[in-house]
Length: 448
Image (cartoon, rainbow, N blue to C red; front, side, top):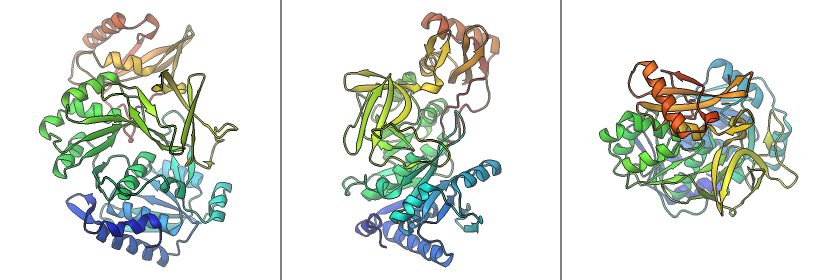
């Protein structure tokens, strides 16, 4: 191996590196799998600067494939299994030249697209001889944007080995959180535990079976865990830390989690595909206030209640949109925050704020109240157009148990009227049997 990040694997020897299903692979064996990938890339003419997709669920092969593509100096587009139309869109936007997919059996399938990527951002990476990473946003509030990062800058944030842990890879490699989990774990000589099925049952069965110590996930998934009752069936005795991010956490959900898991520490994280994962410190386990690190290559400022961040590993830009950096290099996160001294509380994306006759409504505030209503398991709040006030509040609810809809609506309205200002009370309330989240376990909000 030639890349310094990969060379450190030799230090870890027979320590567990990847757990997938019932198979555990050591670092010594992982090196051999990466070497096999290097030979595969050479045999198929994949070279430095080539734009290559890596498609498949988290597994030993996808982990090793990503490492080999980094070592090769390729420009990598990690993707999960997508609908044909969405995949075609992503390949076109990213100007993918080669696709490599990994099936459920771990077999690789390589194909050429016939394209030649000529985007200016790719040219900069090729000229510098550096590997690149292309990540697509979730697109929950619009068209997905493709950010291009310098992989060497991403790798530079991982220090020398100090504390190896067994970490579950919940977020896939098409997400900055999934990439961070993988690289952080490997940098420390820890074990990455992957799961093919991200249901609450499967995840916590895996935590129990493989003695997982750290679970990085989302508030939406953690709420699903509470609904499922899985903690009674698979007590996570090995679990030390749960980190959560990608969306605001309802305080009600955090309070219930602390009650169910009193021995587990909870930490709020903050990161974006465009910037990487920032250092954070929660004020306490039972609060949503956190401190962002103004060190280690990250700085922030607040302008008109919106968070702007400058990062050493910030993306070079978008492939398909203007990049919202100011002249000082700060990125507009679009996240509205409130402050308490050196601590921040993230209220949500500016685009998700509901304007009711000139009054601002933050969806998470209303969702937190809705989750207090008996039999409401999940709640998603968004805006609905109104000819009178511009917008009104709409709530979509998922029930824990089947119940007469009229009875539920009366209880919800009464509860909200007692706890919220009139303009914040949902005027439209819908009961849904469908999931209220994306495949990244993040709430989907859209005005309609």
